[in-house]
Length: 558
Image 1: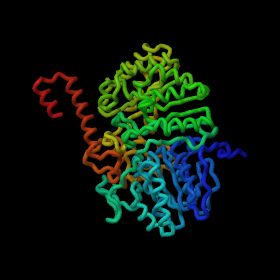
Image 2: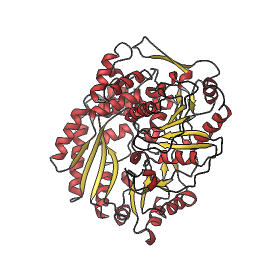
Image 3: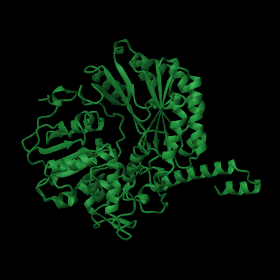
Image 4: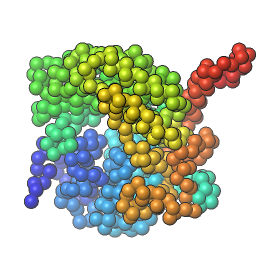
């Protein structure tokens, strides 16, 4: 019999003894232990619950569990990947909890969820949850538990109505969606009566003490890693980027008050450090942080970075990585086309990308990983050709540096300016083009699955009618073919797949998440989208020979 993975854990916090009347709670991650325990968000929420005396929390994964309460009152899920929804349904069934919230009774736990997937667009999954936490756990978790305590002995309906008054708590069952016919588009999303807020606003933590690991274990997917969040969000605001737009504003951890003390604490129990954030090198004191990590006592420490901003890859940064047992650095470039980068608001030049490669090699790194996309709104085949040429140029500029180009298909995300854009039907061919061009040059090309990107787009733009599709898909085996089979069976009860995935939506169209307010209002997102469109049109004008009077007229209109 294998040893429980919990036995290998080294805790960086002290759990609180629960009181006799503590709320019996299960906090689950819908994947294997090694994956779930590597999620910093899951770690922090679990530790927050475990340090409350009024909560008795047990953890649950698909392959491991702590002793579970026989009658839990709260059952929570942290959802980081859309396709993990299957495991949520499986775990609910294993606990004998009805999959649909509408079928639960007072004897069943309140099922709550949070995480980036549910904060972005919870609607495809909404019917499976009683409560969804929109935003940052630092603010939401305590408010949720305290609000629940006040109605703990009440019936389920009373509990949900009370929780709906807490900012950031979304109770899907208290909102009615009407459609233009069974398979038509959304007409309206409204609360069931005037006592329920018409809009739910994502809650944003604005402090300068960010997250750090609460547990280190050899059983994690990143073995024995101590993770610390250096920055949250990203100031660049690339127009496709959920990680930036959904988490605004850009916040940085205080170097002296939280970041360095957290690192010092973590490195007492581990010799592996992970610095996390969408753009960690844009921390205003990042150079000071590098100097701190280069102190002699930290020489044995292995350090890994999440993706760094391209024009901050210096020789010093590369040398620091090499010194701490890293051999590569990852940068997101999106495209080798200056035109596409302007459309998506990626503030980079090809020269800066090439210089990053030169610095990486000069600092002793052996590998450079670049990430891009195919099918970006406004993209043409000539832009893909420029990406291939840029990669060839990098190879010549930094000979001997192993190059990897990871490429995904553009997927529209809620609360970003590109949420109205569909997936480009030519994206798969464009991935194949890049593969042929780059592999022939000895450049490692790693495309993400186009077909699974289509499913990701379906879930990222879907409405709550998709819950029936998800149940059917799971029944049919959760394969790519299962989605199409389920769509065929449900024909006439929801829009076709093409409308969710490929169509460009009108700006005045009712969005599935219109009742959920992200960091920026829709009007601001529309302005950002208009800028992208104007740039696309401007490039088209410049490309063709247009008589000066006509060109002036068009530019004035733009």
